[in-house]
Image (cartoon, rainbow, N blue to C red; front, side):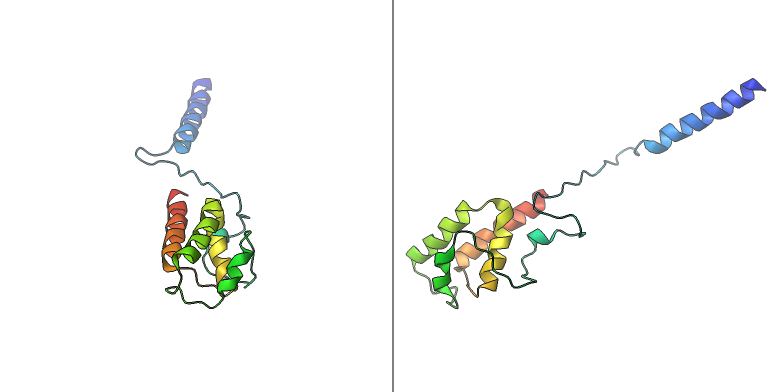
Length: 128
């Protein structure tokens, strides 16, 4: 009788051990939450390029307000460099917020700067 009870207990232990192991070829996904994400949403809104609230956040770029409502294809090389200087001082996680801020402030960045910023955001999404 004791052997029967020990056999059942051993079978339960083996079943628990095997049920917790991952299946062959199946890797556990490691989920990393960005530093600036609150975790309350399935998709982090920090990387969203749509300005939901319309509030402008400044990234030490107040001088760019001079370009409000200017067409994206009408910038001079010097003006493009002003945008580039701001872009290259931002942290990767701030670029999407900067683009949203420009949108809220009705500033159309130069096309080349917009493309560079979108590449940074896309790379950040791909890595995360």
